[in-house]
Image (tube, rainbow, N blue to C red; front, side, top):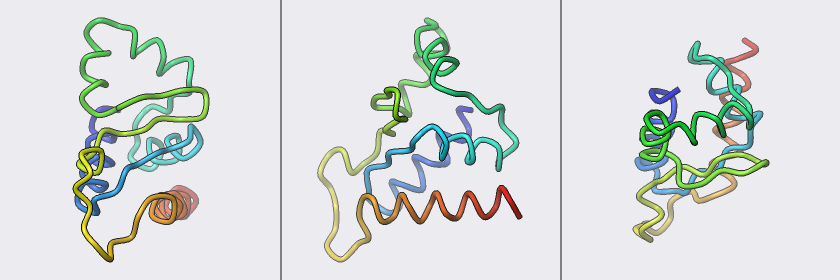
Length: 103
């Protein structure tokens, strides 16, 4: 899972956007990269684990019943002009991941 979170975080940082993934989009990303799929309950247990939680906290800013928000450079407010932002890019990433998963 950590490798997938790192890859998603890197993609978001390269495009200077905050990244929010709902649980379904995260499941698609995990499955497309052959990582075990986790839902809220599994993620919550891993987050609360003293060792694994520290690893997840490197990549995830927060999570709730809707999904996760990755820590990115965009959190610092460093966003350039004319770059694709927020929900449009996240939606495009989710569509791309879905196509890969069902291809």
